[in-house]
Length: 183
Image (tube, rainbow, N blue to C red; front, side, top):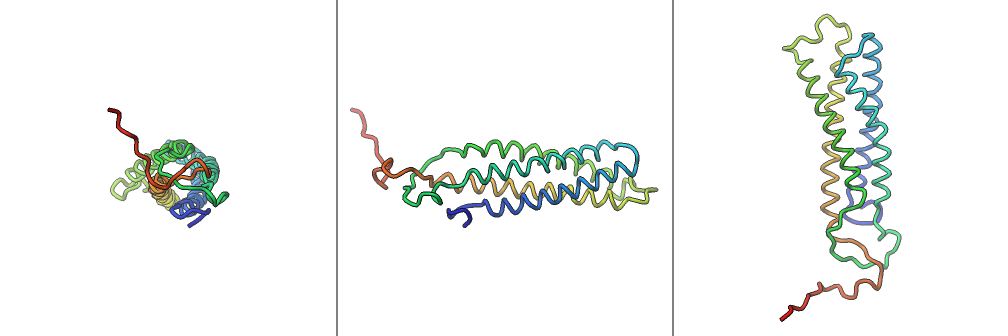
């Protein structure tokens, strides 16, 4: 697939990160407009504003982690594959940032859903209720995109656990080595 090795989920992750960043910019504008319009800070709107700012900052960092973890097979075609269960060194950092944002969007979307539901009548009397509904929808879209990124991250980790590359001369045979039993 992309970047020189077959079982890569980097391309779908990059596209999903791009969508995540785009919706974060839109959400930033909506929440900033809401705070400016009401002349007061609603706690949940401020939380979603902070989450969108963190997303705008975190997505380029996550993309750098993603692009720096490319396989060396694309650079050196003479490498030999061996089995390894070693974790990619930057995956925990990407996963930690992903989890924090995933949790923040889940809390923000769930709280807003409980406040804006038609039975709660939170929007009664406001002329700009559509901005709250749009903010709610984009918050759930952001949470969904982060869930998809998490699934791609796990799929990439599972696919990259099996073959890894080593320099020529380090592996002597393609057959698995056996350890002799001590008598």
